Image (cartoon, rainbow, N blue to C red; front, side, top):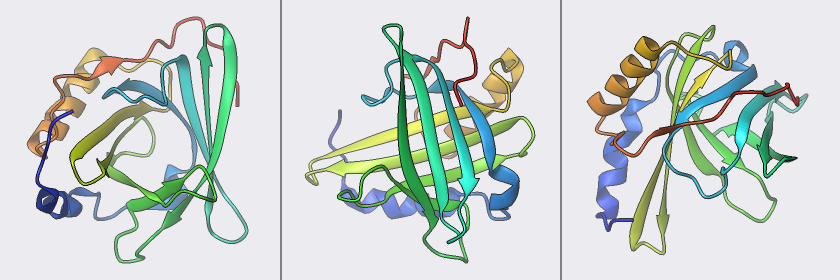
Length: 171
């Protein structure tokens, strides 16, 4: 981790997709590549987003780690209707909503998601995911996704692929 001045975070806020349509984004997404995340160490990582009657989004993340499947369920909300691509996600009633910004998506094949958090106002941690509607994304699409992140000043040098081999859909 590296120390970063907290004032830099607002500079990233305009990055989210300006014409985002949540209903088109709902459904199943597979993790293709990501920046390291301590809460995701497994393989066959996928997420399913479903609209609830109260207009919140049910988030169901599944991964296989050491041969066992685990599921994390949470809630996503649109925090500001004027910026629908800037969602907040929480996996516990006791934790605040963390940023979940959809930077870019075509809704049918690829989505680029970014999040960040400050740890005790001392360290800044970035998260970024390349998601796909299928378990495999062509290398050219991954390259262009990383270019997009880089254009938005998101360091992709530590991104690594998620193992999606030998997976059965768990959701």
